[in-house]
Image (cartoon, rainbow, N blue to C red):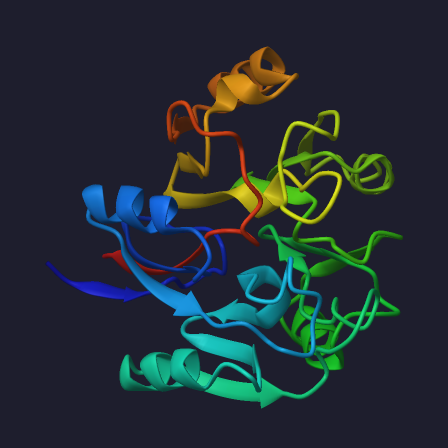
Amino acid sequence: MKTAFLQYANLPQGDVKRVIISECDKTLTHKLSEISVDCFLTAQNSGLSCDIASHPDILCYHFGNGSFLIDSSQNELCRLLLESGADVITTDGIYGLYPNDCALNCADIGDFIICNEKIANPAILSFAKTNGKTVVNVRQGYSKCSVCICGHNIIITDDLSVYRAVSQYPKIKALFVEKGSVTLKGRDYGFIGGCTGLIGRSKLFFNGDLSFHSDCKKIIGFLKDNDISYIEIKNKPLTDVGSIIPIIEVI
């Protein structure tokens, strides 16, 4: 079996064999192991609020093709990525409270990168320009948290400002769902993007039981309409762990 880093960030073309996830959820690690997906774990950044201090979508950004921008607190993750053949650049720009924790929290969905341009790390904006990607500027700093990437230019979001922004682009298929069904310890609620990630070309993983979501039927219908299957963890509340970031796939 031959594997490689995803050519396109967040959008596997084959079965995913390795992801980046937070160290904080052992149930998730176990479930992924059951389906033969290995995990690189993020560690806590002591300069961040403890509820999101180890969230991957806060601490790392994958440009695609094994090129990463990683928070400088992630020594072990950087070591593992480098040993796997990745190109890693570190940044000291992730610290404190919102919006200073959002510089890497951008959602590359294929032809578009959804982010708050005032907050996003300049390297991400430069990457978008160089690679012909359209930046969808949104008010929400937690852009990646708020966007469940279902496929190429296909998303689910629980942020109304994000939904209104992407609706201006006919190439983007988007579903809006209500907030409040995703848990995040220490906060009133988590985000739909923070409990999900693609583990195959058209296979979405939910960290929890989809039936716990108030818009479950809408989500299932949207996925079916776009030929996307899903895996869930039964009898577990949908839990925001800072996204499941696919990085290595079967080719």
